[in-house]
Image 1 (cartoon, rainbow, N blue to C red):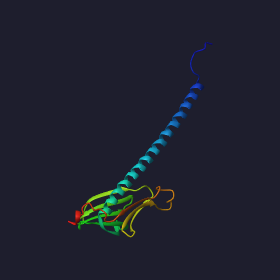
Image 2 (spheres, one colour):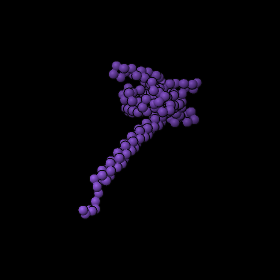
Image 3 (cartoon, rainbow, N blue to C red):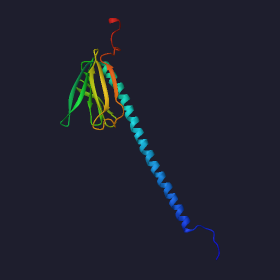
Image 4 (cartoon, helix red, strand yellow):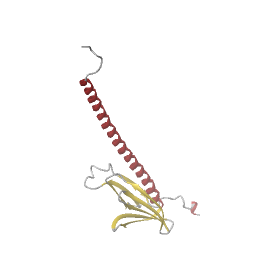
Length: 174
C-alpha cells in the first residue's frame, strides 16, 4: 500500500472542534464587550444629562424670586412638580417628575415656550426643596425603590441660592 500525504478524518474533526471552541469564546467576548460598551454609554449619557440639569437648575434658581412646590396631573396620576417664578412677572420655569426623569418647562404668559427632558440614572428619583436661612433651592437625585442600595449609583445634590443673579440689577442704584 502506498502512503499518500494528507490528513486523517480524526485530525480534521479535532481541528474543527478546536476552531468551534475558539469561535464560541470569541463570540462570548464580543457580546460581553458590546454589553459593557452599552452600559458605559448609558452611564455617560446619564452623567451628561445630570450636568445639564445642574446647570439649568442653578440658572433658574439664581434668576427666580419665588419658589413653590406643587403637584401636576399626568394621565389622572399626580406627580411632584416644582415652580420657579422669575423676576419678569409672566415668566415661570416648572420642573416636573416624569416616568424616566425630570421635565423642565419654561412658560411665558402661561404658554410653554421651551421644554426639555432630563433622563435620570436607572432606579433614581428627583426631589427639589427650599432650605436654609437665606433661601437655597436644593435638587437631589438619589436611588429609590426596594433596591435603592444596589441601583442608581451615588446620590447627586445641587444647591443654588434663590434670587442671587444680579446681572440685570442697576449699577450704583441708578
